Image 1: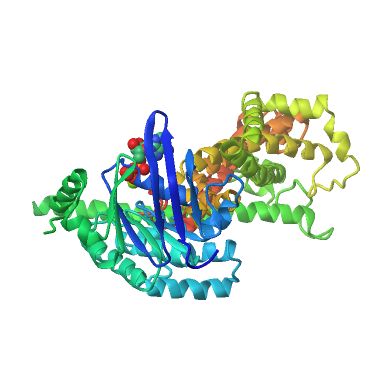
Image 2: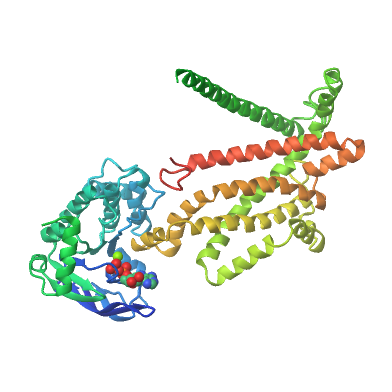
Amino acid sequence: MSDYDPLLTVESVSKRYGDERVLNDVSFTMDRGDVTVMMGPSGSGKSTLLRCVNRLTEVDSGEIRLGDHRVTDPGIDVDALRRDVGMVFQDINLFTHLTALKNVTLGLREVRGFSTDDAREAATEQLERVGLGDQLDSYPGELSGGQKQRVGIARALAMEPELLLFDEPTSALDPELVGEVTAVMADLAAGGMTMLVVTHEKGFAREAATDALFLDAGSIAERGPPAQLFENPENERTAEFLDRVSTVSGEP
Amino acid sequence: MSETGATRTTADTGRVVSGSLGRWLTIAGGVLFWGWLLARWLNNWFLPAGVGVPPGESFLDPAAVAPISDSLAFAVEYLPQLADAAWLTVVLTVVSIVLGFVFAVPVSVARVYGTYSSTVSLAFTELIRGTPLLAQLFVLYYALNLSTLFRGLPDDGFLPSAVVYVAIIGFTINSVAYQAEYIRSALLSVDREQLTAARAIGLSQRQGIRHVVLPQALRFAIPGWSNELVYLIKYSSLAAFITVPELFNVARSIAADNFAYTGIFALVAVLYLGLVISASKLMAGVERRVAIPGLGGTASQ
Ligand SMILES: Nc1ncnc2c1ncn2[C@@H]1O[C@H](COP(=O)(O)OP(=O)(O)O)[C@@H](O)[C@H]1O
Ligand SMILES: [Mg+2]
C-alpha cells in the first residue's frame, strides 16, 4: 500500500449481541499520525469498536483494514495483526505475576523474538520513556494506578505498533493520577504516533487530538475537530452528553 | 488502666516467647526426625558391609534403654524396621505427586481451554475421582497384571521392586485426576482479561496460557496441592493391599507377629504425622517463596 492511503479504514461495520445492535453501520478512516478521540455514553459501543480493530471481537458485517492487514477477513493471522496494533485497557490488565520490566519484555521475547539482553534493553528504554526507569523491578501490586497504566502503555509501545488503541485509559484512576497518564499520551501524540483514544478527558482531546468522534447507540453521531465538537456541537445528544461530562469532571 | 496495660504486655511477651520456642521445637523435631530417617536409609544401602548396623536393627541396644522405660525399649526395637519401610512410603508419595503434576497440567489446560480434549479430560477425571483408589490399584495389579512388565528390574531395597512400580502408576493416575481438578479451578480464578492482554500484544493462545495464565494459576493451586500431598502420604498405605512393603504393610506384619498392635500402630502414627507435618511445612515454604506482591491476596499483605 502507499503511504497516502489511510492507515485505518472502518467501513460500514455492524455488530449485534443477541437482539442488541451494538455497532450500527460505523465508518471512518484514520491517516498516519492522526489522533482520534472517541466519546459517547456508556454502552454506546466504544469498547466493542476498539476490540473489532484488533480482532478481540468479530464484526457481523462491514470491513476493517489496517495497512496491509485485512482485519475482518476470517483467514488472516490475528497474531500478526495484533503485533501492529497496541491496546491500552481501562482495567490496565498488567500481567500480575511479572515485574514492570518483565511485563514489557514478554512480548519482545515471545512475539518479536528478542534475546533476553536485547529485550531488557528495549524494555528499559520504553519504561524510561513513560517515566518509570526507577520502577523496573516493581510488581504491579506495588505500583500506583497511574504508574501501572504507564507500564501498560510501555508494554504496548514496545511492540512498535502502527496504531495504538486506548480504551478509557484513565477512567479507573484516582483523579489526581490522571494527569501523569494523559501527559504521556500527549507526548506520544506529539511524537507522531497514530492513536485511537476512547476518553472523556476534554483537556487531552483539545491539546492532542486531530479529530473527535461522538458515538451514540452504536452510530457515529458527529465527527469533527475537537474544538468545534466541544464548542459548537451540531447534534443535540452530543451537546447533552458533553455538558454532563463537563459537570462531572468540573471543567469549564 | 495501667494495670491492664501491664497484664497485656506480659501476655504478649509470653506469646512471643512461646511462639519462637514453638518454632525452635519444630525445627529441632524436624532435624531429628529427618536426620534419623536419612541415617537409617544411608546405613541400609550405602555403607559398605561390616560398617553400621544390619538393616532393621537399631543403632541403640533396646536392652540398654529397657531400665529407663519399657515403652522406649519397645520403640527402639521396632522403629528401625518401620523407618526402613517409610522409605517406600516417601518414594511412592514423592514420585506420584511429581509425575501426577507433570500430567495434571496438560489435562487441566485441556479441560479449561480445549474443546474435544475438554470432554476427554472431563471423562478421565470423573472416572478416576468417581471410583475407589483401592479398586484402581486392584485393576492394575490383578486384572491387568501390570507387575509382570517390571519383572527383572533390580530390587535391592533402595531401588524398589516390580510391584512398587504398579503402585506408582496407580497413585500417579489417581493424583493426575485430583491435581487436575485443583489446577482447573485455579485456572478459572485467573482474571480472564489477563489472557486478553496477552493476546493483545500478539501472543498466541498457547503462549498466553504458558507465560501468563499458568504461572498465576499454579501459585493459586499451591494450597490444594499441599492437600493432595497430605492425602497421598496417607493413601499410599493402600499399596499394602497389592503387597508393597511400605510403612503400613510392614507394621501390620510386625504386629501380626508380636500382637503389640497398639504399640506398633502408635509408632506408625507418629511416623505418618512426621511425614505429613513435614509436607505441610514444605508446601507453606514453597508458597511463601513464590509469593508475589499483590497476587492472590492472602499470601501478600
Ligand atoms: N461480550 C459481550 N456479550 C454481550 N453483550 C456485550 C458484550 N460486550 C459488550 N456487550 C454489550 O454491548 C453494548 C456496548 O458495550 P461496549 O462496547 O462495552 O460499550 P462502551 O464501551 O461504549 O461502554 C453494551 O450494551 C454491552 O452490554
Ligand atoms: Mg467501554
